[in-house]
Structures are given as C-alpha cells and as structure tokens.
Image (tube, rainbow, N blue to C red; front, top):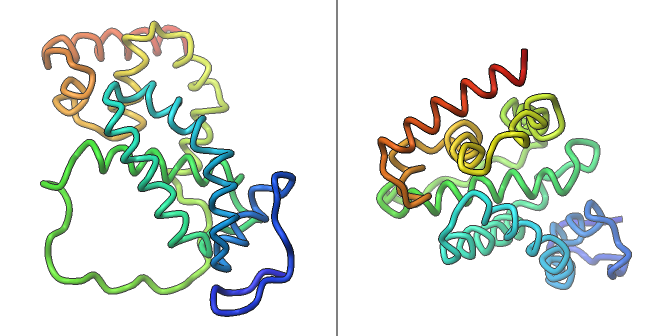
Length: 192
C-alpha cells in the first residue's frame, strides 16, 4: 500500500509498474518512480507539444514544469478517475500555455496559500479534452490540413488568443485569423 511521503513505502517499482502505481509511488516521495514516469512519458509529451509549439525551448520548459507539477501533486491523482496518461497530458498542455504566456502573465504577489488536500474528480475541461481527443471532433480535427489543425489546437484546445497563436506559429496575425476562419468552416463541413 502507498503512503504519504513521510511514511515508508512497501512496494518496489520498475519498468513493468503501471502509471497509476508509479504516481502512487511519486506521491509517497519516490524519485525513482518519477524517473520511470519521465522516461515513459517525456518523449511522447515532447512530440505532442511540438505539434503545438515550434519553439523547442518552450516545449522543454513545459515538459520540465509538467514533471515538477507531477512531483508536487501526484497525491491528487485518483486511480479510479481519468487515465494516468490523460492526467499527465492535461498538466502538460496547461504548462505549455503557461510557458507561452511567459512571466508577464504569472502572479507576482505574495506567497500563495497551499490548496487544501482534497480528492478531485476530472474537471469539465478534462472531460471535454478527452472527448475531443477520442470523439467525432477529434477525428474531424485530424482530417484538417496541418496549417489549419495547429490553429484550432492552439486557440480552441490550448486556449491561446489568435495573437498568441500567430506568434507561436511564426505567422502574421491576419494570416492566423484567415486560417482560423477556414478551419472552423471546414470543421462544420466535416461534422455535418
């Protein structure tokens, strides 16, 4: 049984351990479990984030921030809830948006109060993202041309503004707006 960081851990972890088991070990303070999660998930996270961001440095920051967040918040993951990989992906997508927005958008005030340690269910946003990824909309998005798909992902899924998306993709803001209109029109066609 997994216990909090300040208590002993009984089960060893290795490459055959499941993601939920590794997250439990991370919650118990096991750095070796975090290392295994990183080895298992960092490559595909980096690949998926690179589809949304051309700047390798920003992607690397987002991946690093993702695993720092996992180290700090693994105790919040519930094995009965969302799939562990989906939980990790949600963190990574949010960290990418934060990295893109940069320090100007971060809170610089006093020290934040720690959040209460409560069990959480998947948020509405997480459920929508999972539905997009595995539903009709996800299939329709996959059928878009790459130049249209990245704009939909950046604006609708990652929550960036058109200006932020244009900057991220290295295109003019007007071009981004035009492509976004085309992408939305094409999605309507594909979904009707």
